[in-house]
Image: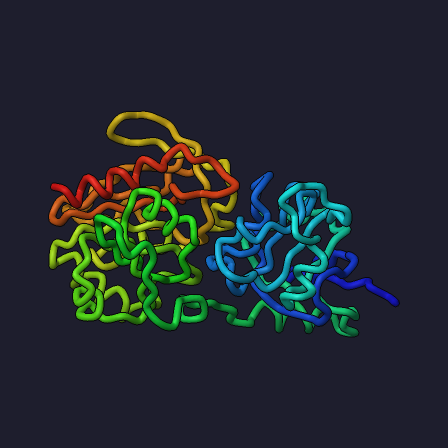
Length: 357
């Protein structure tokens, strides 16, 4: 059986690799992550919905498949590209191998690719469309021209829950987790602090959120362009005007900024990995953070009632905002990161302290 497949980039570059996981061809946006661990969290992170993910760390799958580490019930990305996959994982918690897991989940994998060169191309040209195909097209130029024009997108409605769900019924504080594609680690951090957590669908109205009588609202991460979510942004604005304490993470951070009149922009190749340095502008302290986003809040667009709290050391983009007109704050990075640094989990304590105030 010939398991050769080709990764074709919209700029005309072609990589040859070996298939694993599911069969088939696919087209998606191509991004990379620099995380050295946490591939299971990457695979199941809903923010990667609709994307091909390149793993820069060369050996992936060496500790197998561990369902307890999943961030959602199934992989959400479109395809997974690695240099080398491990066929014989070794870990007492492992319940399977990467190849079988992706095959059973319907996710296409490609190995044997020079991910170092591929990553350098993405860094130079920016994120782009790409296709995994079994055969190279006869007219490669026409194929890549068409590929470049394809409008590929994802939205929160593909990954949000269908019905409200409640965890830890006996918790002291009640938090609504507004689900735009949330990672389970967020709910875990709140439950570990004895909160009752009600997960609400992305399309919920403010009335539906308020009817839960929450002590606070956590806006989750999620995929896609934040600015297209105009209906959700309107409902978030209403929640902030009601002065219910709000904490936004990743996409939630961007949606909060848009609700207050700021603007977002698409980054050249985004921040994806577990080694992003950010600075607290108030204290000057540096933190290493886990991130997964392709858009950022424009610092210059922040309104008077919004104060930049965290900034990225590498490119000075906005990493967090404190709001002065309502009990709310947000961060672009993931304080609940699994498979990554936990330097900023204290932000959940800050959120709960805000509820007391």
